[in-house]
Length: 106
Image 1 (tube, helix red, strand yellow):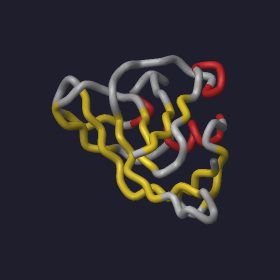
Image 2: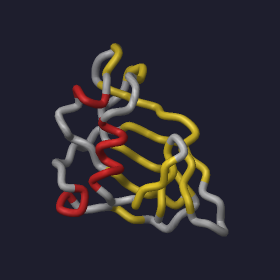
Image 3: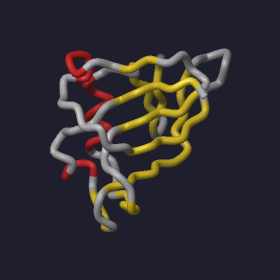
Image 4: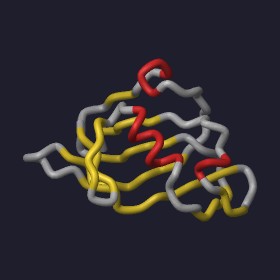
């Protein structure tokens, strides 16, 4: 699975992709439960292990809505939704590296 963000394409489980999201712009935090990274796509379900991503695991949720063209299999990010225990602004770099990248079949 390839993921396209801001005109560049990355492997779904690459360290480079993780850096891209960690360097992303500040997002608005809404009331909820936290900060893992979730892709909702029409791709097959794949949950990357901690070893594959090279980071820790946190049970909280950050949702990225995306489109995946059936022919190319590329993932295009549409929007980012972040929920956490406190209502505030939070930048990805302040998440202490606790992010899970998950591909979900709707």
